Image (tube, rainbow, N blue to C red; front, side, top):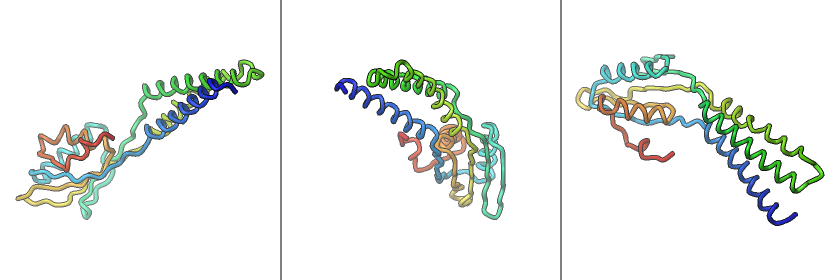
Length: 184
């Protein structure tokens, strides 16, 4: 095997491995638990949070007054644009692998180029894994008129960031700030 074809095959296989890891990362569960405090009483904070979640498509699933817990559920959909992009990248990568195989094994003829047909498989796998039910839980930890209220929120990381950015100023919400500083 010529050196150029061997290195091209290696790079093509590394691209395939990268696509597999990207598919795993794009559909990874990113549920996070964060403690949020507010200077306002729970009778102001909880209805505002409930209304905001319902406007975003979450539906109230369960309420447990003994545990001071509100649970919302919703269906997260996969991005159609990302599925198309992954299908295109998968097709191009499979086509490159087919070309390399054709050069390495000329006896196969043009059959290795049919690997391009595997491209849509990447988009299909992403759509199947990324579309899933999600849960948002709000738990009242403490409620004191002097210190305000403290909540423990369990939700997808992106939902928590949106909540902190949109409702933080109006409800006086503050947390340790790690969600907004983390690059992942």
